[in-house]
Image 1: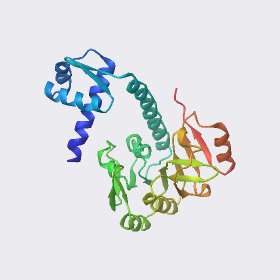
Image 2: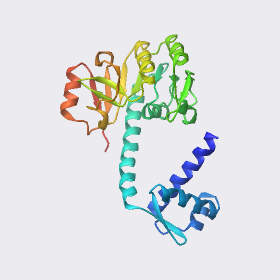
Image 3: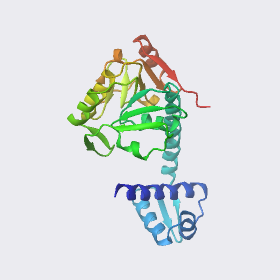
Image 4: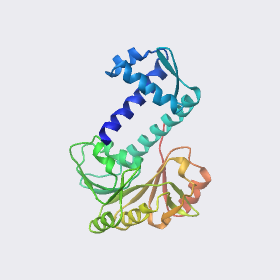
Amino acid sequence: MKRAQNLVNERRQRILDELIKQPNLTADELGNILGVSALTIRRDFQYLEERDRLTRFYGGARVIESYLDKSKRDDLSEIRKNLIAKKAAEFVDDGDTIFINTSSTALLILKYLKGKKVNVITNNANAVYIKKDFNVNVFLTGGELREPKDSMVGEFAYNNLSRVTANKCFIGCSGISAKVGMTTAVLAEVAINEVMLRQTIGARYVIAESSKVGHNSSFVSSDLNKINYLITDQDVDKEEAELLSSNGLTVIKINEF
C-alpha cells in the first residue's frame, strides 16, 4: 500500500516538475510523458489544485506563483541536503559500522558510500528505498514504527541498539545551538539518539542545514560535549558557528558552488 502511494506521489511531483519546465503541456501530453491516461492526469490536477499547487484550465493546468517560489526554496534545500550528505560520506572509512538516525539528510549518506564496505545501523525504515552500493549492508533496528517519518522507536529499538557499537554516528536534528545543545521535535526519538551517541566509539557527527543551527526544538537529545562535528551549509550564522566551535565542535561548512 505504501509503495503504491509513493508511486502516486512521485507522479504528481513529476506533473509539477514538467509543468514548471513546459507550462503549456496538456493533460494528454502529460499522460504520454508519464505513461498514464489523461483521465489519471486530470484527477491529479484536481488533487493538486485542492492543495494550492496549480490552477486548472480547459485541457491543462498551470503551476501557481506561490508554489513556484516554494519550489525554488525546496530545490535549494534538497541540493543542500545532498551536499551535506555527500560531505558526511567522506568521513566514512572502508570497514566502518555507522549509526544513522531518522534524519532524511543523514539517510542520503547511503547514496554516497561508494567502493566502501560499510555496515549501516538505522532506525529509519525509509532506508529500504534508498539506492546504494552493493558493499553497503543495512541493518534496521526494529521497534515501533512511527509515522510520518517512518522512524522505529521504543524499547525494542533501544534494546537492540544497546547491544551493538559503531565506529561513527551521523545524527540529524531539529535544532542545535550553543545554549541548549542538540534538540528534536519528537520525544520518542530522544532515547534513540542518546543510545546511538553512547554506543559510538569514534567520531560523532551532527548534520543539519543552516536553518537548524541556532534553533532550539522541544526536546534535548544531547549535550554538545557528546558531539565532535557539525556538518552544515555556508549560510550558517557566523556567530552561532563560532559559539559552537568554542564549545569544542568542529564546524564543517560545505561549498555549494
